[in-house]
Amino acid sequence: MRLPSTGFLLLALLLTLTTALPGTARAAEAVKLAYVEWSSSIASAHIVQATLQEKLGYRVELQRVEADEMWQAVADGRVDAMLSAWLPTTHERYLARFKDQLVDLGPNLEGAKIGLVVPDVSVGRQTGGLAKRARPYIKAESISDLAEYANKFRRRIVGIDPAAGVMMKAREALRIYDLEGYRLIDGSEVSMTAELSNAIRRQKWVVVTGWTPHWMFARWNLKFLEDPKNVFGGPEAIHTMVRPGLEEAMPEVYQFLDRFSWTPEEASQYMIWNQADHGMYPYEKAQRWLRMNPERVEGWLE
Image 1 (spheres, one colour):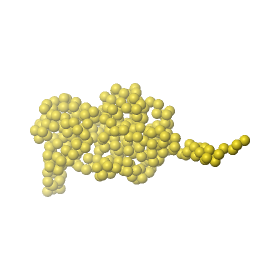
Image 2: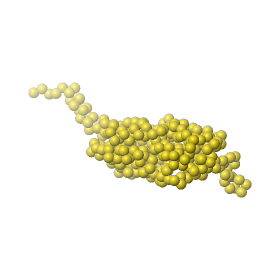
Image 3: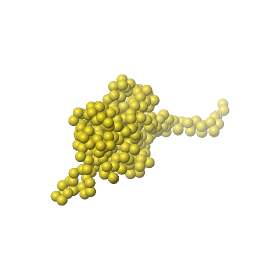
Image 4: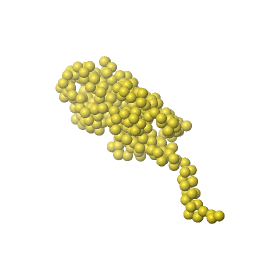
């Protein structure tokens, strides 16, 4: 009887060891996450990506899409999950359309809010002679006031990508508040915050579509305009949605996503770090966040 050659034995041993290495099977099949180019969505997607890769050994692919495509991709099973479903108001239309085609794991962040936002900044000194805060240069307090100050605002509301839920609500607000002549300007979060920054620097009147958590509230004094007709709804929660069958296909990933949650303050910490580098190193900022918040991360991995 001939013994196997040395080369054959080495190959068999190598295949056995490779199969047995922890995380090898995990890395073979990528976890696919969809996100939108919003600060909050970038934050949750990269934190989850970093945790799955650094702590659990999975390979994660991020797919940047528009809001409607994000919902569609999870419903179709083209991606495994998304972490940016704003409910009950912002994405109510998408939920009504896709609710039977995906699995809602519940909120991963509570205390979110959307609406129309203006600078809350005074001209010149921020306090007067009696150390009282000086009156902001923008006098509008409510969405109803936009009609009165239409010329000051140049009849413009500066928005983001047209498929975003806050944009749908802004279009509804134009109709319900009878803001005849106003235009909702499509763009992106980057173009919106750039115009907001320029207006604050020049002390010009501007109203934008806004939401929290967002780094711009840490950088500037801003306020939501009151919404007496409740177009933008009350407090929001950001939910995690996964494709049907993920629990059976990737039980460890499913369990982690089911546990993943954080606070607006924790999300803002990441967003401020990421914005400081103009969003150039989101994964490195996620790794830093994991190092700075070990107890929170351990809670997700129990």
